[in-house]
Image 1 (cartoon, rainbow, N blue to C red):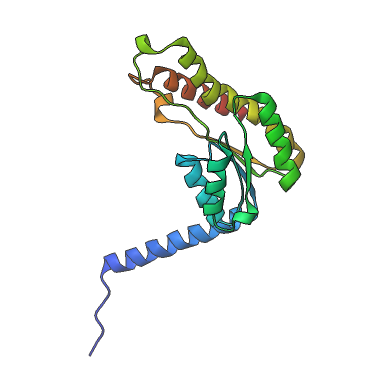
Image 2: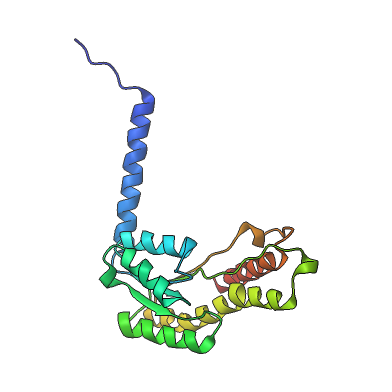
Length: 196
């Protein structure tokens, strides 16, 4: 009895699965043993990024303010012994200089910096205090500029390194209730474009 031809969708699905598998393998080879420093790594997107990079055999540096929470994240990662917790407030330049020195002391290099720490808001402009305006700009813009400028000489010396800025569509068009957040994301977007 002749065999039935396979449906087209089955062939397409199998090709799709193979392509995805190949991309995952390439990513794993790409990040294996790379040193990836993530700010805002204690929860949310930062924690998810830490898990994703650990799965790809990267050495992850976890930074946020709460050491005990970072330690829980580190313990949840694949091969927790490869990863390092460095508690620091991204808005404190002295703490971040010290964190940078610790990263180099522990790992000797940095391959990827992910500026993920962020502060959001949900308030009308008339209800947003100047303290809140400044706090959001400090975390979402100035701290990322400072850390990037701190790490940049290492990347230039290594002749390699990548920097990621976590932004938002809110940085491309202002939205009600998120004026300062939108402004900070727009500022870091423009600054990052100028860094290229």
